[in-house]
Image (cartoon, rainbow over all chains, first blue to last red; front, side, top):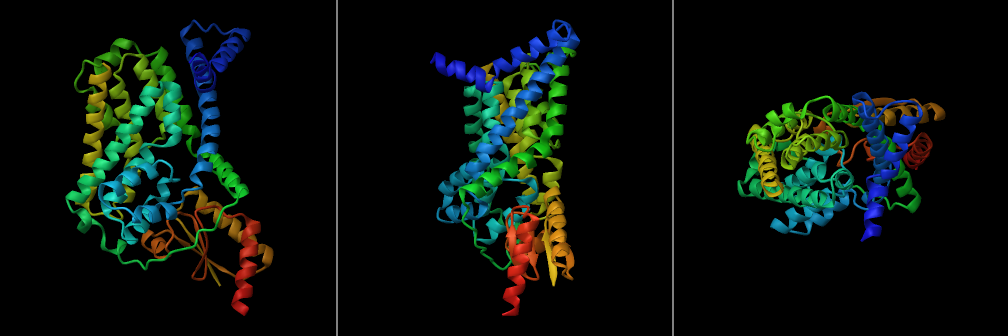
Length: 330
Length: 84
């Protein structure tokens, strides 16, 4: 067990890096006991840690993901029915490469192939929410219990959401043109190991390029929360004893477009300042699952009624998860 | 000949267009470029991952930024096939 703890501390929490940054700051004459020094320490350590983890994780995970292109996912999902199909959709959502600019072609491709809309929505909820990289980052910043709990509730949220949409027979609220496309099945070329490695490398460059700014902003805000904002202010608004902390965190998070890698440092700083874990998780889930740009994109393919149902369901579902975590862990 | 770049305008689509233009320049072809950003139209080509690269009506690559060398090869093959 102690070997595992040591590996966890060194590889995931990167205790060595923390020591290194501290020694470096002391060497250049910055007192890390001061407010500024402590913020700087936290900022440098967190930024380096997130970028190292991000690069290693994205590489490994993209390599795995190259085995699950959406074409294959669509084929697998077509073989199952009902709740099993929705569960598979939620699970495959975690390993299928996903980029928000591809969500609409994917929605059309799935629906067009005859997949029930509930299955597609299960996929669309879980795909941005439960991402393999984010789970490992959660384990690094919090711990494995939190990371696993996050996966379980994320998958549940996706499966129940798809089931609800299927029960309510929302098919008629999908724009007509989605069904009208000729069904084209393109051959997916077999990838060699070299192709997969090239794909993984491309993904690392692409994702780091896309998220670095969110990481810097996120860690910056996290560092500020850590050292400059008095705990009493934060607990007055977001404290675990305030019933409205969860809805507030969720509603602030919903329209925001940011990456989970940028949101995590903020969530972790909030928890350190006495904010309930449920409140912090609700904020993170709201930011990743829903955003104004993604809602506007989705409006292209679904009618208002289904769009409202989707947004409302995710919002309330996330709030419920937040409350549950606060009660269970508080 | 028409080359279509399918994608809503994300950075990857722009990079693909640059590569495709380079490839065309290398081969000295006279080609019209069309950017397809409408989701309806993108979907009609059957792709689920953007960006997509289409020669006339034929999808030659999708879901990745194909590099210039590969596009040159794809163009050569396509032109040869058309001649036959």
